[in-house]
Length: 232
View 1 (cartoon, one colour):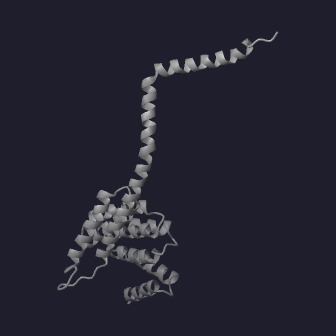
View 2 (view 1 turned 180 degrees about the vertical axis):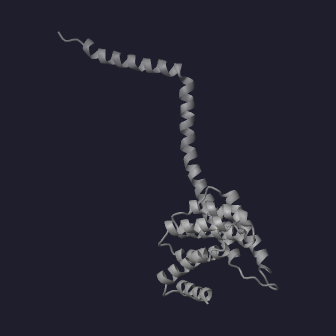
View 3 (view 1 turned 45 degrees about the vertical axis):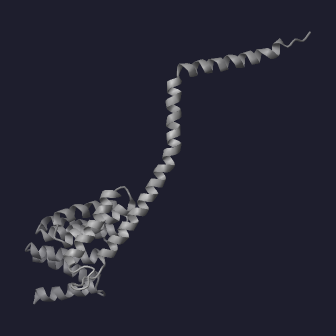
């Protein structure tokens, strides 16, 4: 004769599992509470962080636009907005530096650093400009400004009469970026560096190369002019 006992066994087994889970939960109340708090914080915090980053990027872009406006503003001794180049550059520098201070983790900060370096170079702050240009060559290595920052490093060294190191960087650039849009300009600059280092032969070699590779553009024509001047 069939009974209901067989049907009760799975229920008893299930109850036993539930009791075991409850016993475990009681023994680990603190762990469960901490885990719940962490999950709650993550649920609230992640959207907040993402929104905060988005807002920071937006704010940084606004300051970046203001800095670029200052950078390209006209200088007028009577009507302004800036009466001297120094005044314009100092205001521009302060604006871009604000991004590096207040929004350092944004993408805008990478571009701001490039303009900080340009302002510092124009103001004669060559050591600071070199350091920022150097960082830019890493942060902006995949965009044209990264190559312009490389040129900035070379010019900063030249301005400090550090010609051997400037030549090394220029030679390295030409080797690593033979097809860069700055290759001709840096080759011409390298010839100047050699001349300043009293190495006329190497200076002429750079000019001859440039006159040959860029014969139809202004860089090549300038190289040809300098060659004639040096040979006369």
